[in-house]
Image (cartoon, rainbow over all chains, first blue to last red; front, side, top):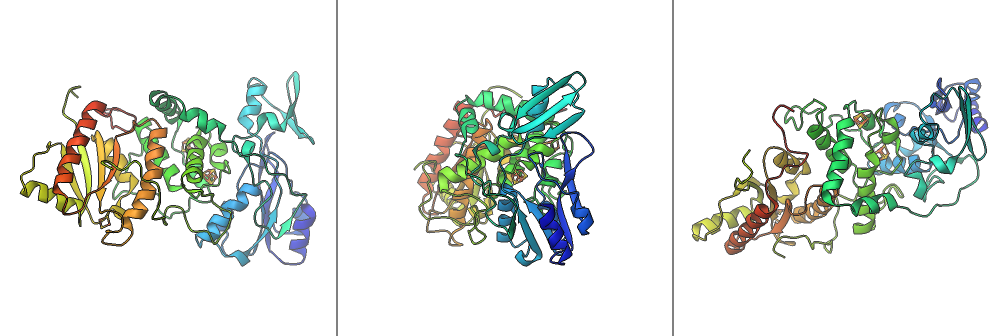
Amino acid sequence: MRQAARRLLEENTVNLVIGYAWGTLPLRTAPFFARTPAEADRLVYNSLCENNLVKYLLRYSKEKLGLVVKGCDARSLVVLLRENQVQRDRVHIIGVPCTGVIDRRKVMELVDGQEVTGAEVTVEGIVVRGEGFEKDIKTDEVLCVSCRGCKYGTPVLYDTLVGEEVRAREENFGDIRAFEALPPSEREAYFAQEMAKCIRCYACRNVCPLCYCTECFVDSSRPQWLSRRPATADNFFFHLGRAYHLAGRCVDCGACARACPVGVDLMKLNRKLIKDAKDLFGYEAGLDPGQPSLLSTFDPNDPERFILGG
Amino acid sequence: MAEDREPRIVGFLCNWCSYAAADLAGMSRFHYPPHLCAIRVPCTGRMNPLFVMSALRRGADAVLIAGCHPGDCHYVSGNLTARRRFSVFRSLLEFAGVEEGRLNLTWISAAEGKRFASLSTQLTQRAKELGPYKGMLRKRIGV
Ligand code: SF4
Ligand code: SF4
Ligand code: FES
């Protein structure tokens, strides 16, 4: 990784590499901007690299960038290419085959919420320690829900690949199937509890590479679709609208859910839409920049058994 | 809000067909329940799921979207795009606990006044069975 970034900067292929470096807190990496070969030596890559850096492509639109992308991140880049938001020749994609990202919340559960003061990445997982404890955790025990059934760990698009290709996992929508099987009242109760937590900081929207509208429907005042207050009903309106706007576009990277400060289960809605796109229309987002958008196209034979009156 | 009030249905009707069908039903003096409040849209392709959520939020118990039959859309394919969007959105709402049947889509041509009358009767019946929408989207006073 460092070598690749160093070379790109030395040879002036790019003038900025955006990747990850250790953050200031344990279990945390942070986006890192390397402009010189020396700075490139601070880059790291591991299962704690939870941001989707593709978001920065939209912001740093004037520079020739080197960008570190995981499998899912690469798919979000493909969607941006497809939607004409970025130019392919402006970015040198440093692809990293990914075996899964760690969900910090699950780690915290495993240590019963005790304060973690140090963490170390091992081959199999991580070792976390705090006052009076040390725990060895395997990555597979604490994977994000999206990573468990990830078929695209190896980026679908890259210029340089750092590391060996990884094997595709078997698709797994078990979480969504189980939820679908619950009675509607229980499903609504679950969402009521999740929506009540949301403080409408919009971190989830702001980290998503595919949320790039200059005016989001939540900020519009004519019409004002929903109240600014974080009331449960408005939060629900926001989350349904947000999820729907990502239908056929969301690539299941999970960055939104990890960014949420209060742990709202955002992936329930996102993954439901991903599963439906697949089941109803055989559609998977972000595999090919030439692929048409799910919701702006149609097939005359699309299913319509739900039509009232037949 | 009284529990046993009559259902409120918001109908988004395409200008070129279903809206005209509603007129025709009236002109032909067909009887159908008065619960449907019609909103004219230029085409079902104009439908935005935020309209649907806003209707539920502001007091509707059921929503109907009605447009031209596939192949007859004034703008060629607005209804076909709408159908695809609708199937995705409808499934999302149900997943999130909004009962099946609150959101409906159908095709009614300008000549089908009878069909308009019978479908609005059917829908009113359905809305009565479901009862008032009291789900999470509904705006609550003072909350
Ligand atoms: S990040 Fe979490 S709290 Fe913030 S708006 Fe999104 S869901 Fe709500
Ligand atoms: S909605 Fe969340 S999971 Fe989907 S692409 Fe955006 S950040 Fe990634
Ligand atoms: S014009 Fe009627 S549905 Fe498009």
